[in-house]
Length: 238
Image 1 (tube, rainbow, N blue to C red):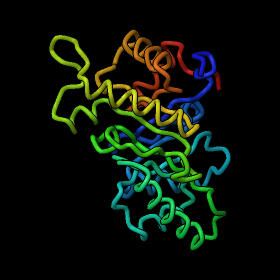
Image 2 (cartoon, helix red, strand yellow):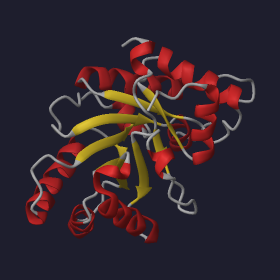
Image 3 (spheres, helix red, strand yellow):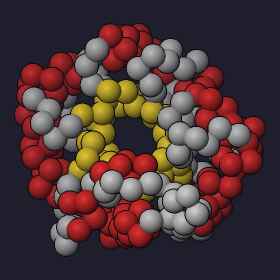
Image 4 (cartoon, rainbow, N blue to C red):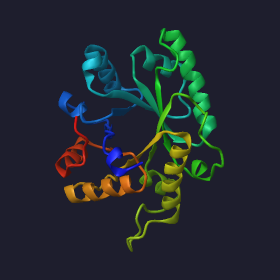
C-alpha cells in the first residue's frame, strides 16, 4: 500500500468518557467515533445517531471486551450502532465468538446479517502477538485492526519508549504483527497515536511514520489530537 493511497483513509477517534461528542464538522473528518459500551455517553451517542441517520458523517462504534454479554449486544444493535471494536483480541477464536453473538443480536433486532462492522484491537496483548493463527476467515465482518503500542507495553510490563529512546522489542514485534496480520487478512490497520503526542510536529512525525511502516491510518485519543492532525496537514480531504 502506498503512502498516498493510505492518506485517503480517515482516522478513528476514541472519545474519552468525559469528553463531549464531536461537532458535525469534526465527525466528517473521521472514519468512526469509538466509545466504551455502556453508560450515559453511549446512550447520547446512539440517540444522536438515530436522530441524524446518514447525516452523522461517520460511523459510531462501541468498544467491547471478550466478555461482552448477549443483552449488551442486543441493546447496542437495537440502538443501530454501526459496529463494535473488540478490545484485547487474542486471536481468531475471540473474533469468531463475537461474530456468532452479533449474528444472533442482528436477527433479534431485525437487522440484515453482517451489517454490524467488527474492528479489533490486535497485538495489544501477548497472546495475539504470539498467536500462530491467521485472522483470514475468522469473520467476514472484520474490517480493520487497531494497534496501540502503549497497551502492549503496559501488558508486558515495559515502557512504550525507554529512557534511552529505544523502542522495546515486544513493541516492535507487536507493531509488525498487526501490520502483517492485517495484510494477510486483506483488511486495513490503524495505529494509535500515543497520549503524549500533543504538538503538531510530533503528530506529523508519528503519522508519517505509521504510514511508512504499513499502517493505513492512525487512531487518536482526543479531539485535541484530531485538531493537531488537521493543523499538520495529514488529514484526508473530506
